[in-house]
Image (cartoon, rainbow, N blue to C red; front, side, top):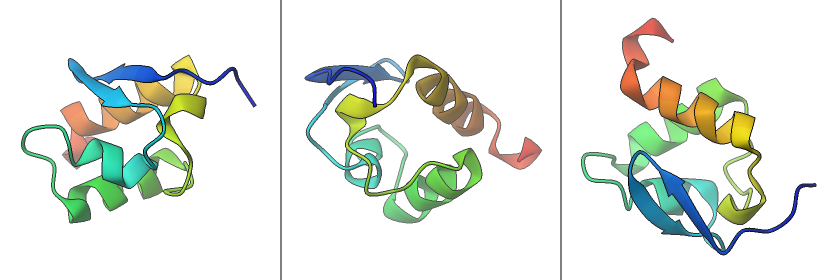
Length: 72
C-alpha cells in the first residue's frame, strides 16, 4: 500500500485520511451515502479502504467519476 496521508484533497475538499472511503466522500457537498457507494463501486475501490491509503490514480478516478457520473 501507499504511504498514509492524514489529509487528502478530493473535489476541493480536505478529508481526514483516517475515514473510510464512503464516510469521507459524504463530507463533500452534494454527495450522499448512495452516491458515495456508487462512486466506490464504479471506481473499483473497496468502500472500507481508508482515504489516507488511496493512491493519486485512485483519487483521480474518484474525482473523474464524481464529475461525470452518467458516463459511468
